[in-house]
Every structure is written in structure tokens, then in C-alpha cells.
Image 1 (cartoon, rainbow, N blue to C red):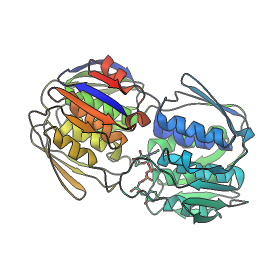
Image 2: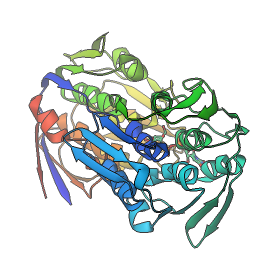
Image 3: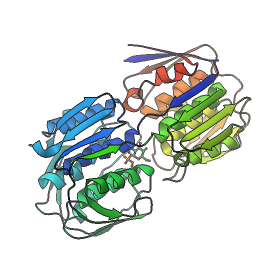
Length: 417
Ligand code: UD1
């Protein structure tokens, strides 16, 4: 278990380049299964979830090489269509391989995935999308068994705009004969990025970023290179860290549009924020004020992944801040840990009410999921004394060297094992 030791009370100062996006690179890596030449991806972050994904590709028979931020994947040597529990159990997002393996092999066997516990996280929409494309789907002893010797284009409507189910449907539809329309699709920037990558691979598709995506066909292109987009949740993390610690930061290599709901909230709380091309500057000179109601919604609404981070930023704001979590049912577990630091948080179902306290006190807390863990670090930056975050491996699933990045901005953070 890693132990993160944070000394609170040091304002941030400096600039930082934002890492490549975890949630963009995972479906892109799975989609590499469709290619029949080597793919070279750049700006690939070094994360546990990325390493777990590369191990799945290797297990399926792909040639995978990594050099710094560059990952080369060659799926011409694929030999298998089965992903065992030992691999899927390392992250829930491994379900993203369902469409890719089915498209490539005509069948897929995936042990039910693991990952962050944020309440029930079913995969029914992923399975329904594969069925709509003509696959048969069974679940046997915790293994999803899917078969479709030939996938067929379909007009489907997702029950809710699930990010992963949209991505699975987009990838599988590339191998289908005929036209596929995915309605009530997720509109997240990572979906737009996946469409860009699939087009570069040879897909004829459009609509990503709207609620209706059309896939018309796929003609493979040789030797594709792709640069992974910046991580909007890491950007939100650093902005919320600056809100909690005070100071002045500049984020480089970001897409300001992707974090607009976060920057608007921080601005309403009293932070000074300016955005330029691929750049955001934030200054936080005084105590922030509450008064906001933060409701998580699918993009372009406030992201559920930034909810714990914003909660950490609001703990010392003057007045009350209300959170409404609409995406995941069990996403307030960080609140009990924050309360150990002196935070005043009342929870009732989907709603959390934070009453800002002038002081928080560092103590021993437990990271129970990825963003909840990062939120505890942020809270620690604004607390008095030392906060010890015990993390059984969550934070490094999604952040590349977060301790070094924040320390370079003036935070006092050390990790020990
Ligand atoms: C992705 C992100 C995750 C983010 C989430 C919501 C990746 C790797 N992860 O996760 O960081 O928090 O989007 O923005 O991109 N649902 C079902 N049935 C399904 C699938 C989902 O009921 O088959 C429900 C989920 O329980 C949840 C909601 O739909 O309540 C949204 O989940 P979804 O958009 O699928 O999230 P992920 O793709 O898993």
C-alpha cells in the first residue's frame, strides 16, 4: 500500500503540462484490435490502468512496445478472444474490449470486470449494444460469452448515454456490415477522440459529440499514428488543488472547453481564471465562497469524476455548497474520510451538503477509489499539519506522478510504500 504524506498550508505556484487522458487512451488501445498494421500512439500516460490494458492486448496476442510516452501496438498477431479474471479484475474498463474482440475474432469471452466500487456498475447496456449488432450474449459463471460470426449494422438507442457502451458500440459497428446508428449516445470529449482515431484507422463515421453517431463502414488504413488528448479530469484536479491550497497555477496543453463546467464553478466561488489556447491560468488569493449547487450530469454537464475533487475544494469555502450526484449511486465515500479531517458534510441519498469550515486538520485517511483518493490529497493541501492518505493503489490508476507534479508547484507531498 502506498502512503501519501501531505503537509498542508503551502500555496501552489507554477505551471504544469497536463498528461494524456486515461479515459481516452483505454478505448483507443482496445480499438487497435481493428487495425491490420502497426499503430503508434503518443502522449500515452504511465498509469496502472494503461499497463493493465497493455497486458490484455499482449494476452490476446498483440505485439506491444512502450518507449517513454509512445506505445506501438500491432494486432496482426492476435491469437485469442478470451480475457481471464486475472486481467479483467484489475479494472472495470476492461469491458471496453468486448466490442473490439468481438469485431476482430467473431467471438469474445470476458470475465466480469473489476475496478472502482462506486455502487452497482452493470454492463447491461454494453451487452444490449452487442445484441443489437447481431451477437448472441450469455453469462456463464461470471464470464460474458459473446458470439457473432458476422456483425450487422443496426439502429439502436441506448437506455442511458453510457460512455463505455457508446464506445463499445462504435468499435464493434466498424466491423458490421451495413449502417449503424447509435442514438442517445454519450457526448463526452473522449467519444469525439475515439471517433477521430477510428476515422484515422479507416472508419466512415460521424456524429460524435452529438447524441447520434452513425457508422457506415470500415476500410483499414496502413500505419496510423495518433496523439492522445489531454486529461480533463487531471486538469480539474490541479485546479481544485489550487482552490484548496491557494496560489497561482498555469495549466498547459489543456483543452479549456473540456473543463468549462469546472472552471465556471470555481470562478463563481471567487477564483480568478483565464483561458487561452490550450492554456488555463488560475489565481486563488482569498478564501473561496460557497453558495453553489453542483449537479453531476453527462457532458457537457459537471463531470461525476470531478465531484470529489470539487468537494475537497469546497470544504473551507465560506458558506454552504450543495452537491447532487446523478451518475453513480455510491460516490460519496470520500466524505466520511473528509469528515475525519474536520469537514462538515451531511449526506442524504444523492445530495451532499458541505458547510465550509475555516480550518481542517490533517489526519490519517483512506483512499477508497481513484478520484476520492485524489480528493483527499487536495483536502490535505488545505489542512493544518500532516494528512496521511493510505492508498491501496487507486490514485496511480489514473495519475502519472501526481506527487511530483504537485510538489513541483510547491506542495509538500511524499509517497512511501
Ligand atoms: C466512464 C469513465 C468514468 C466516468 C464515467 C461517467 C472511462 C474509462 N471511465 O465510465 O471515469 O466516471 O464514464 O462519466 O471512460 N450503466 C448501466 N449499464 C451499463 C453501463 C452503465 O446502468 O451497461 C450506468 C452506470 O452504472 C452509471 C451510468 O450508466 O450509473 C454511467 O456510466 P458509464 O457512462 O457507462 O460510465 P463508464 O463508461 O463505466
